[in-house]
Image 1: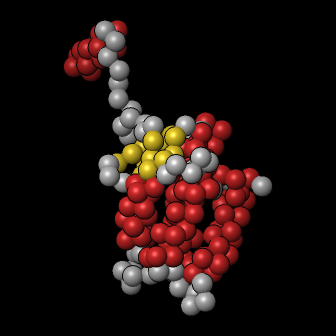
Image 2: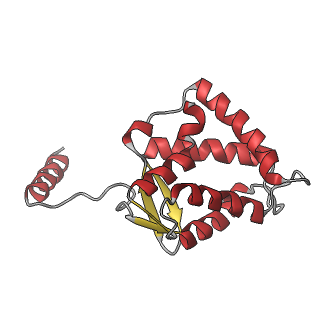
Length: 168
């Protein structure tokens, strides 16, 4: 108990001296490049392809869509694993958990989207996944300069967590 009080006192002194406690996930990034998103998409493919068959199934895609939406909202940020690990803040209005209705809608939207993205063979390969993630980048980057900044980062976060897809 005495040690806990000492630790709390030390923390209070550090805060009073202007020490800034780091966020749980590190600093927020101010820019994300097209190359960063491409690297992130390639790395994400391997995490989403749970059975290691070098393709994403409709179930893997729908699950990944829900996980990215849930985690981004819960954590208040999305990560982009590009040249470095970057944190993009999720706008405050989007930081609420998915309702059961939103979750059901998101699952249906993701499953329909999967077949559109997978093409004629109904299989999502790495290049299909990366192209899909790059489409999200292109929707977010307004000035077509290959860099997401300021409001473009918000737009990319919204796209990643599917905020608009379940709100409309």
